[in-house]
Length: 74
Image 1: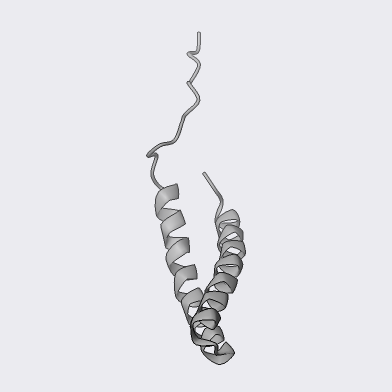
Image 2: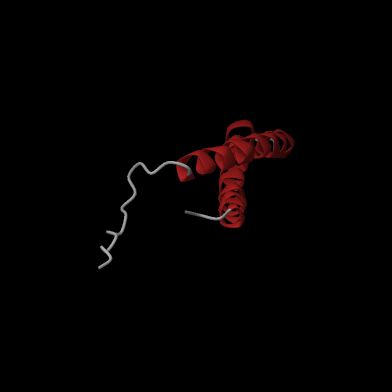
């Protein structure tokens, strides 16, 4: 299970990558740095919250996890 600290760090690093991507795509579409930066920052704030929640929900489930077998005590 990931710690909250690890989840927060993963969230921040991923959001940096995703925000830069969003800004570049919107700039390519509109040609406006103002619009692309504004949209990128708003999207980043919302997506950071949703990603953190998503990670914590997945972390709370065992779906798809492999567990080490427990050795029987003698």
